[in-house]
Image 1: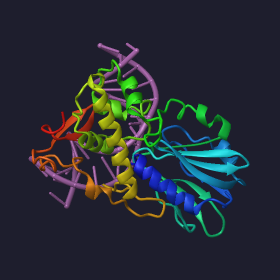
Image 2: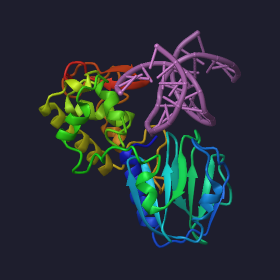
Image 3: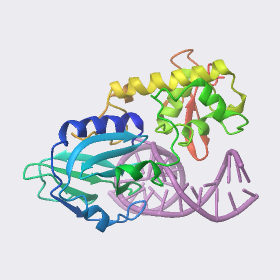
Image 4: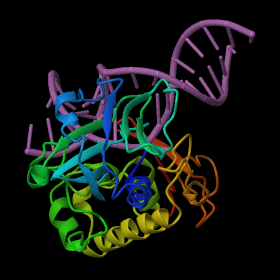
Length: 273
DNA sequence: CGGTGGACCTGCTGGC
DNA sequence: TGCCAGCAGGTCCACC
């Protein structure tokens, strides 16, 4: 489900609702997520106060006091919802965090590709899930020079290069297509074949598309909602994703779908080169 | 070494 | 109406 703009939207919602609250209890209904939840470890969060909420790539980070970090990944279908305590559990409500008499946080994930860990702030950068992540796409470190350096000699298709989390964190299948359209670059180009001006176009497109998507609270195609249950609005602004056969908004050419590494890519064969 | 394809799960849609 | 194939926003690992 969620890529960087959706996770950022969820984090902003959580940041408005959670800090100052104390984690009064944790209930684990299903520990078999992509990796099994360590229930004993998670219990160490009980009694901690929530200080702030952060994000790294597609990971949600909840910083606690005494110093701990609760890490969530939402996989394809995960949701984090904050609201008044519910009397009934939904089938896929796997983790329920009590936040006092009037509030709780629920982790819901039908496909169970998500993750939840507890760690400490000092070991956070060394955590196996976060250790290999590339730079944040909206940071200074993400530059044309950096992309050129990482792309040098690489023969993989540009689409796969953008989806490689060790190159850049947080870009997923929808935004990869949208970014390549904005950059006027073909998804099938070999990464190593780009010129510096093309890398600069790609950098600018990454940042422009993500910033615009965050401003619209992300993309809701099937079922994504934020921490308050609200859908995003960026699905109305997708230029190519899911639009096979429709005219390209730039030149009217029919948008094509192709499968790369088992995943759909949408692009305009005329204006993306 | 690097890239592709399958595996992990459930649920929805569209075609027959 | 019912069934089944195909597809879905992510990531890891075995295999070429």
